[in-house]
Length: 227
Image (cartoon, rainbow, N blue to C red; front, top):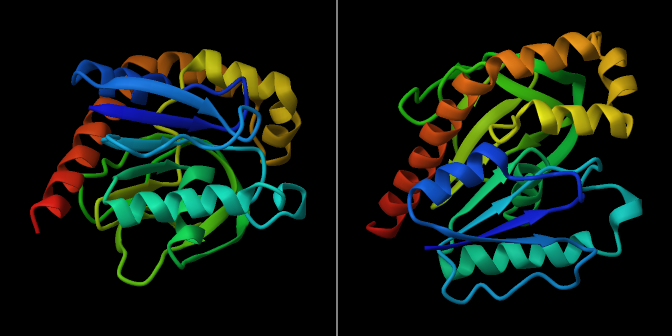
């Protein structure tokens, strides 16, 4: 299976999610968008993973390229290519398929447990959160998990959108904190050093949760393909 990982910043990696796909025999390729040019062909692609970003999908400062990403996600949907959208990736998928994205009532940063309607697909966590927007899912979506801030996961056809970050390890969080995230975490009431230490301690369990999440994404995709 070929998997395309779309990232938006050089410091971002698919981490535990990439490991989970690779463990199932997937061949992964990564595209840094928009810096590396147009998004790749979807021909013979088995799955797409879209990672987070520091922006909101509705911001003017990304207006010159976000439309192309949304069109590409619509093309993936039309071709039946499953998408796993993570944080900004979930928001981009939402906007592409007819939902809306808006500012959340408050930022969520840190390790957070969620209320799950489908524990066999989305575990309660805790999951690492680092966002200030929320998805209003498209018509027909099935909400899989939520909390008082927002929808935390939903499925639509073969696609899975999650607001949290199943992919991250302590190295990734450290890069975010060094790239402006420290001040953002403090504004959200988090101690950045404590957050980093907690992430380091959580790594083994987080890797296992990410593996099970990828397994769930593949089951969703397979189930949609057989309907």
